[in-house]
Length: 189
Image (cartoon, rainbow, N blue to C red; front, side, top):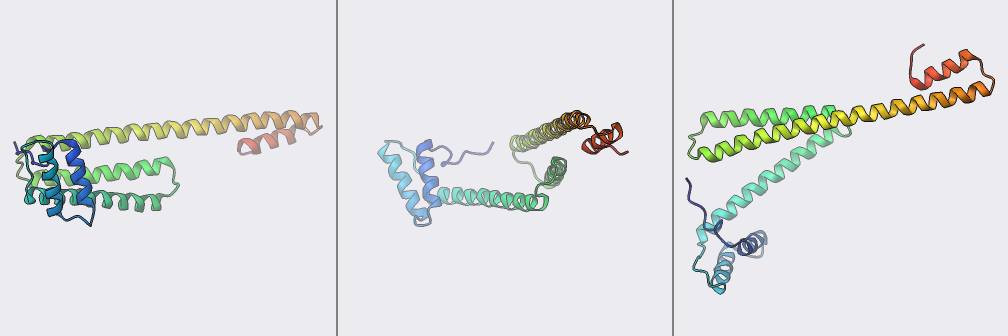
């Protein structure tokens, strides 16, 4: 099992401060290292962080941040393309994205020298859970679309009945009333 980083072993409040310092362009990694060690000393803790551990952590944070930025850009691109498309199309898009992720993961698994089977298992579990979540979201979206269609159909029925009642009172012929009804309900003659 891989050894835990000294940064991961820091008390949460010091780790949070370190993260903030690393995100501040006015503070160098060397200064962030010094500040973290000063806080550790002030708290009476024997742990210290090294410049290299802070650098590795900063690089890792930047990689994660870059992946998040790329994910947001891709999502915005897809949203711009799909726009206000029906839920079914959005669901198809998400399913295609999940298929791509699963394919990429399977390629990585084939090529990888799996040093940490636990992390690989966790990754596979995350994709499985994500797929299940997406399936449930798509089912919910389908139910919502059906519900909206049903509400619209019921409203058209109510309107057609009301128009028929008023038209009959107004003396329209039965054929005219039926034609108005068909038009409201969207029924072909």
